[in-house]
Length: 113
Length: 115
Image 1 (cartoon, rainbow over the protein chains, first blue to last red):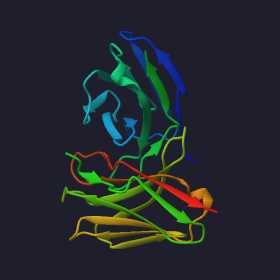
Image 2 (cartoon, rainbow over the protein chains, first blue to last red):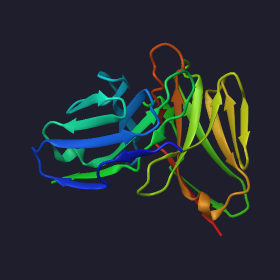
Image 3 (cartoon, each protein chain N blue to C red):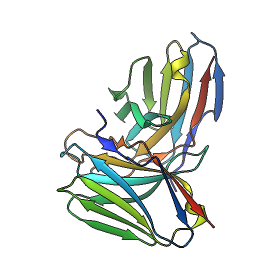
Image 4 (cartoon, one colour):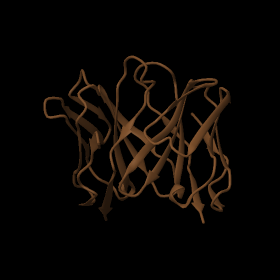
């Protein structure tokens, strides 16, 4: 079974802090993704990585950056947290190639006060 | 621009009956479609998928139908069980080129199955 883990289930940070969210997958997947989930908006793609050190912006990258130094680990960074970044953050991974599903971690509920 | 839409925020069904969840998309480049189920405080779990070369895919109690001309897909759950109560997301993807399996999600439909 694919396992995707995220470093924290719940996180509370102050406005202006730098925040790191970590994601690790154990299936040697090439592709990794960060989404945020907000009520009524579904899941929206923030950034994704198709290989080590390779990254591309998703639909809502503003205020975020990412890092992928090792194949199994994909980090999401909030450079200066703001209250509108309060959300559920979900990491996913996927085998490279045509039609494969993404596997999700349990999510991190981030609250920025 | 919402390329994938689930127009019903919620659906309530009696146990044993059929649940039908609907999804519409606008981007004709999408050629692979998926349904995910999500319980509160958990990540989404993959349920079933369908390629655009098919119009139906079945897996146990779950069947997905794809109508390409209408840009519409639906998920049928028969029979519905209380444990099916969750949020259901449809998602769409392009399999070619440099898409890398990026998914575009709908807003989700909350399914409640009453005993």
